[in-house]
Amino acid sequence: MSTCPSCGAELSQEWKFCLQCGQRLAPEGPVEVVVPAAIRPEGAAAAPAPLNLLALVALVLGVIGGPVAAIFGHVAMHQIAQTGERGMLLARIATVLGYVWLVIWIAVIAWVVVVGIG
Image (cartoon, rainbow, N blue to C red; front, side, top):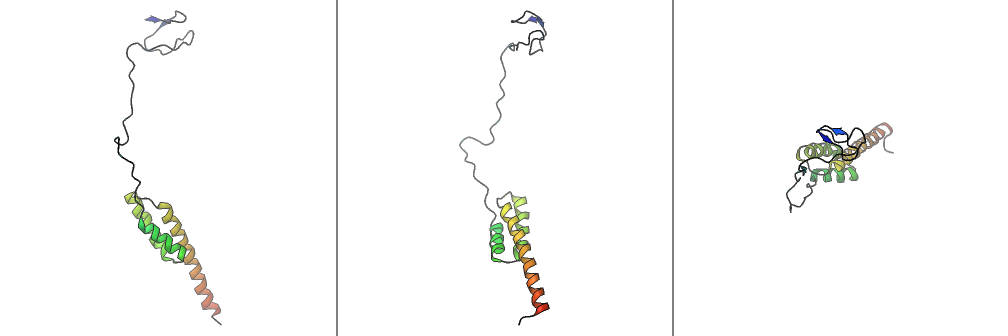
């Protein structure tokens, strides 16, 4: 057993603080420092993942007004989930735009059928 350098109380080897005065005790022997392993080797630049081109095409189709953007968006999301490419947000936006355009097209076609042109 050792004694506390601050108050002189008897200490156990596994204690990190003195129970009498609260003094932090210095560990005996060399202190082992744990260094985390590197995530990637030194000198290796972190290249961003490539952009999924189908997601970009789906977004363009969604902006133009094509309901087919919903299909392309779903396929792009599936590809991105498997490959880890970038563009998930683009694919989701394209999918939503595709469904919005699908509803608009169905409404216009229904209006033309019911009301007629002219």
